[in-house]
Amino acid sequence: MKRTVMITVALFAAPVLAEGGVVERLLEEYRAAGAAMPSSEAGRRLWTQEISRGQETRSCASCHTADLRKEGRHAETGRSIRPLAPSVNARRLTEAAKIEKWFGRNCKWTYGRACTPEEKGHFLSYISTQ
Amino acid sequence: MKRGLTVLLITGALVGTGVTVFYSAAAAGDDDAHEWRGESRDARRLPRGLMPAADPVYQSECAACHMAYPPRLLPARSWERLMSGLDNHFGENAELSRETQEAITRYLVVHAAERAESRISAKILDGIPRITTPLRISETRYFVRKHDEIPERMVSGNPEVKSFANCAACHRGAEQGQFDEHDVGIPGFPHARF
Image 1 (tube, each protein chain N blue to C red):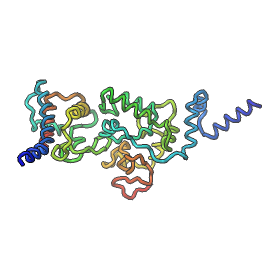
Image 2 (image 1 turned 60 degrees about the vertical axis):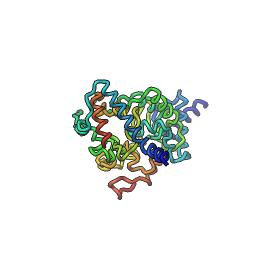
Image 3 (image 1 turned 135 degrees about the vertical axis):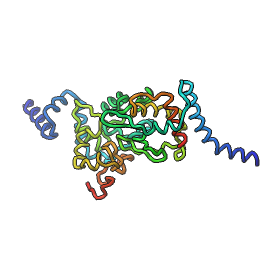
Image 4 (image 1 turned 180 degrees about the vertical axis):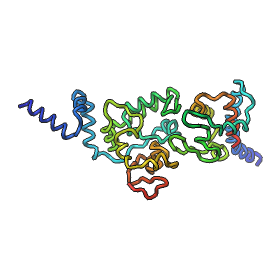
């Protein structure tokens, strides 16, 4: 009986641990690269901060909307984007390589440069609480 | 006599296919050109649907931002040029690792329009001058002709559509390679018929 309970607990906890593991590991990397303490509040502010880019302004919310639990829409192509919030989309934040790939592409689109480890830390802690 | 026959044949070919002198001249020493002209004449015998994009790497890397366009919709040279400029992909950064980029390029080139296993491929190729390399499907003459009656307010002015790049917004079978105009529904314009 005790064993069954433990297995059940392990089964339900596994995805949560895996997700926490990926995010924790990345945050640790960013800290090692000199980033200040990650703050989900700072991440939330950065998320909707509009950046002037030529004729238009851009922010993370341009495509992902300000509510991460909602479906987004690609600003150029109109393609729908599944919600980023792990609370409604369990596959989010489970793969380090995928997270870094999208930081790479989307920071360049939004800011015209790579994000700093500190910014990535803020974003990651904000997204993971949604 | 033989020379007269040749002239007659060339004239016949010009009138028959309706191509400009320029293209015939370009085609004269080029077997490929004869080949695709020949294919286009048989276009009506080819199946209507297009093979949808099936490659899982292409799907996962490209289809997050836009539909995985069927490779049959552009010639191989277009895919090659497009894939070699991913750092500025229509104003966006879409860089991939070298292996991934090469694998996707291979898939697109091998399945490009020259395979002409569908009517649309043959017609698209027919409308592309051989000296040009279009990067957007929506720039090809065939595409422009097929969409010339669609007003801007239904596409760029339509928040549900936004762009001609968003095929599946109106072509409900697009992801399955079906672009038949009888299956078109423009969001917000339920009564528009084509």
